[in-house]
Image: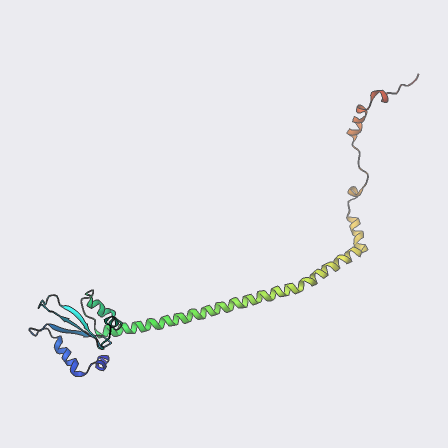
Length: 206
């Protein structure tokens, strides 16, 4: 109610109370209520039909274009003007709705800050992980020539080591290393059959 006191003086508020009474005969315009911007809402009739009164808005401050009035009309009063709401909203309802909107804005801001911090944390973790991977790859790259040199040196030592050569000679299979190949007895038995009988024949003199 303090907001209305700042918008309208006392005499005007008393006049609105008088205009809100519907028990006075021959009255065709009735005051309904205020909003938080100081706008006033009315019901009136032109033809005297009191069963269906028309509804209108009287703005607190005049604008050049009527479409600019929608910036200051709360959704509750807009529903009442369009007859999608039967009862007019009270100032307490409008104040509570304003608090609710402010609270939603505050919660949305806190959620945005939370997700922003979470994004920064994930980016930092990704950066640290990538830095560790680069350091590990750099260490492997620097150690690769040393490992190659060590392997080559060990190979050269093994080639010149007589004890290792002796061990290798002991490990060899004597059967595999033998140069004499065993002869096939079946092939030897078949050779006389394939030979020429005239040349192979030997006549022994008596």
